[in-house]
Image (cartoon, rainbow, N blue to C red; front, top):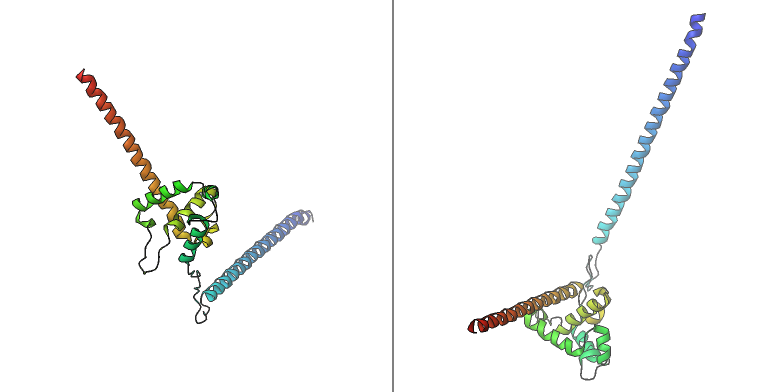
Length: 211
């Protein structure tokens, strides 16, 4: 009798351990099932999104429509842009006077003329003419003025592209080219300055040796 009684705690402990093990196994199985369900749901959402994107790219384009699926083709009116520039800033009787020009572009008209002459002499990119397709290139004034606006006000070039009829890549390239020309001018000025100083030092040394 005592032996049977002493076995009860062991049986209860074993039963509790088994119960806990079953519950833990069930919890792990449930957690694994939830994880699999979550992964499957995420895969389904991602898959449906990719399918929607592919179908959007393959959608039919009506006849005569110049748009493309990735980026819309913009037909820039460069002649209109140059006319606006002449009427507003650079013409014989511009809508904006010299003071307005300096406030807008942060340089005077006379300084602008000097900058224009320098960049055209030092980089073919800024010279007017025709591109490889025979169309009129973006004008020197459009490239320079949009660059000066960007540098003077710190705005994105996209804020001015509509007025100057310039693509984003062309505007950014113009800014880069102006920076390169500026660096070349600074280097040439430094070399000239050092050359003058070296010449003066040599002349002074020669005069001292003569005396």
